[in-house]
Amino acid sequence: MRRRGAVQRKVPCLFVTEVKDEPSAKRERQPFKVLATEAITGKALEADIYNAIPTEKVDGTCCYVTTYKGQPYLWARMDRKPNKQAEKRFKRFLYSLEDCKEFVWNVEEDFKPVPDTWIPAKDIEFCNGNPLPDENGHMPGWVPVEKNSKQYCWHSSVVNYEAEIALVLKHHADPGLLEISPVPLSEILEQTLELIGTNINANPYGLGSKKQPVHLLVPHGAFEIKNPPTLKQTDIVSWFEGCNEGKVEGIVWHCRDGCLIKLHRHHLGLRWPLAETYLNSQPVVISFNRTKYDCDFEPKSLFHRFSNLDGQRFDRLKDIKFDA
Image (cartoon, rainbow, N blue to C red; front, side):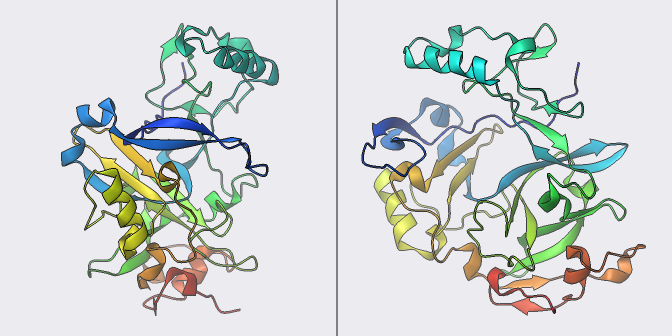
């Protein structure tokens, strides 16, 4: 049996959602929208959402740090998906409006192959030693990011396995200030993070450029919302539209029982990305003392370039520039 990685369940929405047809949206990838109603879900209430910690939902791609080859490694998200034939069967079943849970998968034959290093997420159910797909027909999981990986080149740019460090964006000790610094991979072991940057999700934070791409890791839950709205939908919409702290992709509530609850701007019919984001409204300082590391960073690497900016402060993330 394969080992299991971090929990990566589909995070439920704060509100009950409904599907609305969008027949006029010809250029959209799907002719419908999933929009929130005003009713809070049972899952959110069971998780004690009113006492949860609200954090900024950062727009990137999910990663995970766990051991591989005897040392901490960054892992990229990889969902194991059904092959074309199985996917057609599954969609026909869904469109028939029958109970999804009754669909029977042939796990050994219905799914595309994955690398031998692939591990399923921790909360995946197993049957006869095989992982079972979720309600969307996917098996969430992870693959290790090898040094100089071509497929995961942006992931590999933020880790240095020789020094066992990662480039992380987080809050500085001074209020209102962000910090980019190398963090030992051992300190973020068994944590999930978001990879953001130039070549991720159309770069909503304006990091770097085509010639000098910049990518960073953000630990999940790193940016707690200091002045959150109440859990009334009208208050949340007003918060998203009317205050600087609301210029975020969404909110993720961290509940006491470990449950996560989310709300995306799209659930409320609000636009994303934005021309200006809250993350980009804050100054950032680079803290990277190269002398602490007993290795030479490659001249073109982000580690080398950020170490040359040690101590420098920028008004916004998008203002960070490396010398040519």
